[in-house]
Image 1: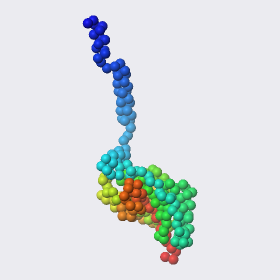
Image 2: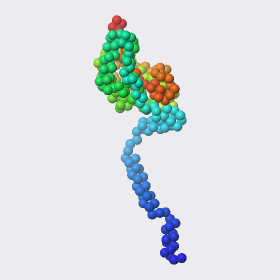
Image 3: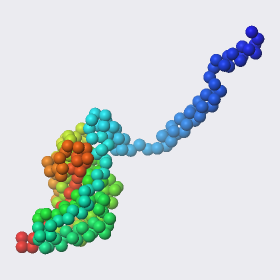
Image 4: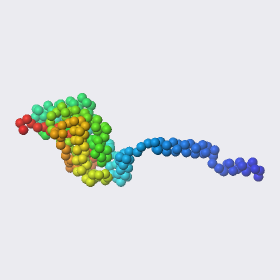
Length: 238
């Protein structure tokens, strides 16, 4: 066999010519992403939240559904005018008009009973998974609500609620601690950042024990994870 035929046979047995170009391209892309990674900064909180979410998903927990925002049902829930004192009905109408004027209907749900006005905020708007740190979007909503609270002189109770899933990670041993800490976080933001009079504010955590709906589906559990801002009705004769 001639030397020329040997060289042709050796070339045919190796990788095709395009493979060399492709390998060079992959090497350049890898180098590019390594360079980007080296220039970036990693948020420990975000990384921990992501890892916990993935771990919970694979273990059958709530996973990333914790962060799914479930729109409040009905937004502003109609009430029976005959069931409320005239002064309470006037306050309810003022609150609902404020919510509609500031386009907050997609973020909160409003209802009322003889005890006062309930502004219901889904936890996914305010917090990350098993976190009590208020998100940027949550602060935006609370900023608008603070304007409303500063127009109304009534006392305000901030209620924290969770679903019935035990805490798998984080610093909160039970849902009691988580719900209470979230309520206090909202209280502190309203008083320290938005200057709502702290003498009007109080916070309470109910854990999983006052659900809006049964904790039998992921969607229902997301509805039960919430913070209620209760504008307390105090009749003048009291």
